[in-house]
Length: 334
Figure 1 (cartoon, rainbow, N blue to C red):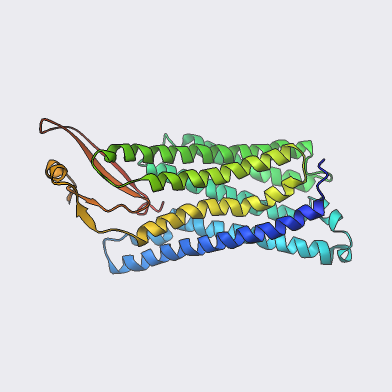
Figure 2: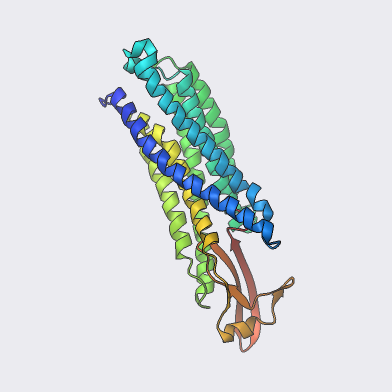
């Protein structure tokens, strides 16, 4: 057992979680504002998708906002319980040591709910980017199902523990939870980044939009969450009291990683460019190709998280191959 004082660790957790929650709240408010603004614009323009307001990512954003907020509220309640209500505020160490208390159970319940929603939204994004390919999301879906099982079981086991949080009956369930969420995030983030990289490679030779910002956004979000998960697992496996700090702040960190992408998408909507024609040679080469009633001779100015590209391979004036990769993040709710 680590010699890091338990009470000091929890006080630091309250302070830093409040900072993280403030950052999350700004990102969440901005994300929801962009969604509602887009819906308002859609009501005036029939071409806009009014279903965006109640899309999966918008609903997920609301759920994550509720769970992260609930987690922070419980953290503050536990602070007052430890130093005011429990035994007249004379036994904060005992209060924070009792991991089976209802407030601690509620705290971890909000955390598990946040992880499940964030992982589900990331899996949804992967599915959209890969053109609704169900084969690609088999692994993350299995991991999410595993998290949905291991999470509630871990919480139930916590209610039965009358000793340390590092009890053997609880440890393997906690490890399973973070193994599942870590696998989902790494796999899905890498899958999205790879797909966007392929799109970037295909359109690079035609002078198309630069997708570097998309890759950077996905990598940054994945790195933030993955590194923090590793940090938690390291402190938990080391049986250090520092794990109370990492598990207490993991909830807002997961929310921040999720909202960072949403805000980036929202900025893409706000900065949407006007249609412009590509070079004359490429335009003439594409002029005879249509999809439905749309002419693909025109490409659109790059929005930070939108790719809608038609790539045509030519040789001696003849079309040899036509491949279309569409990764329209904003229209799909990504």
